[in-house]
Amino acid sequence: MTGPRTLLLIHSPLIGPTTWQPTAEVLRRKGYRVHVPTMTVTGPPYREKLISAATCDEPVIAVGHSGAGALLPAIADTAIFVDALLPHPGQSWFDIAPPPAQAQLRGLATEGELPPWHEWFAPEDLPLPDGPLRTQFLAEIPRLPLAYFAEPAPVTPAIRQAAYIRLSEPYDTAADHAERLGWFVHRENAHHLAILTDPEQMADLIMIGLAEITLA
Image 1 (cartoon, rainbow, N blue to C red):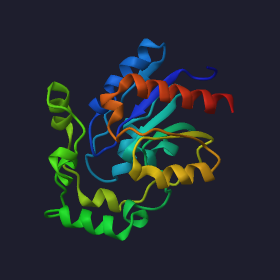
Image 2: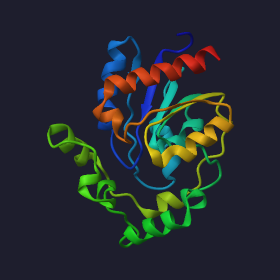
Image 3: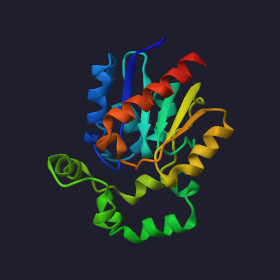
Image 4: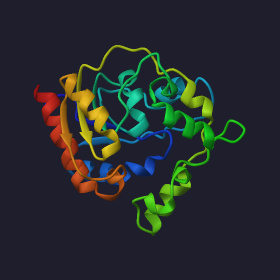
């Protein structure tokens, strides 16, 4: 691989850094420098503070999962999106989400605050076996203000090189859009939290994406 070998693995603000740690360990064994910043929502301006938390003083390739995708253009000009939202500069999540999803999220909020992400659906829908890893993952999940989803994403220069790794069906639309943008897209029939449960496979997929964008 040419170019920077430092990878910045960025988790969604809806969950915690444990999500990336198993895959980070595999990538380190393969010779990459890897940072996993903690993306904690502390107050407005939400995204500005999150971007600051991910700022690195060396050239990096950003690898974002889920809700972190909207932040990537403000962090690096080369990125891999893993089952992630695409950039939507100047728009909020409410601006781009389908009306049923907007209504569902608003219905979950109590006094402007959402329950932890894993409580948005049935426990059996969380693809994590019982054990220490599940316990640690759940312990990191925050309660986010509904206002976070109403704050516009930053307006930044477009990503220069990008790849998209689709893991689960809900992200088909994002993968389709990435293809129309001319990005390399890999579709894997896994699940949204495979970066936590299948780190060897996910590291291999990230390396495939890296090869595509650095040789393009």
